[in-house]
Length: 435
Image (cartoon, rainbow, N blue to C red; front, side, top):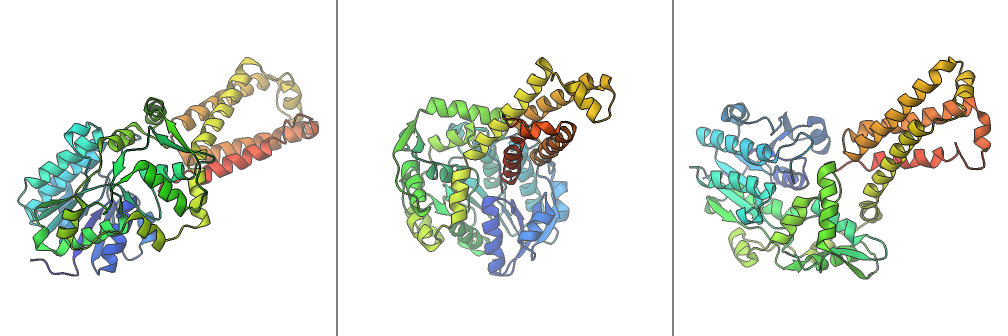
């Protein structure tokens, strides 16, 4: 039997939405936590007490890759996960290949406890890459001679949000109407991240939970409509009419997010949501030994603040601003190629540059504008592109304004319009953080 505390725990996914709550709970319970993360500086800023090791689950493909990390570890908690593959992230590697190699290494070293966090909807019938890759690791773990615990959780929420819960908050903060997928009758049993973290901590020390599959879920079944409405009430926003969005239309928007590799809605999230996220709350409560809070109870204990309303209102404005910036740069680039400015010679003269440079420089900047549009649309190098936009627009404004000062007084605001454009780009750069 494992001692109650302290344990040396290897935690994967510690910088994620759920992983942060688990890390906080394990530290509170007196355990020594080693976080396997890609960004050590980030986790150390959040949790100075944590021991951090750098690893990329896309590359941890052999038990030998894990053995050095497990040499002084008593227990392992795997909270790592992504919605779907993209931008150098492989769902199969993160959900299946790396965990299976980890479980084999744990079996070889006879690690005292392995807790695997999965989802109720991680079933073959769900058919998504997320579900199939998660289930493959779950099945592998259940076949091993290890003191394992498999947790298949329902919708996890908290006072913060990420991914699907951020989308719910965005729907709750939508102006004038509350958009929902279809009738909004998709059912969930939401569990607060702190209650889930409590359960995970208990799974590390209780022998009666070994080699069991639990379904952490809240005590009530709520539809998506009810969850969004409760979230809107928590945000202190008045009730507005519901707008039923055809699922086909929502899926088209999700396809755009899939292609771009980013966005508020993805195909996998729609599929997992419609598949079902219902467990047996009574059975879970009896096994785990405590009753998770209802959403209303959790919200009451952590009232919202103005920044929560900001986030909810900005959630769908960020992709709208992204689309606007793509249109700006694409339009600017095409206009420069198809209709070069007639006064480029005068601008070259004012800048003391050879007249012959005007056309090549104009073409180069037009192609740069189009490249920026493509990069933003594809969701690549967001922070770098944000800075690049700001520098280019600022440099263009100052340079052209110096070369032709009369443009500052142009009645159409040829240069003055760049001031709000710069502000929009700075705001966009501030909205890029996902976690």
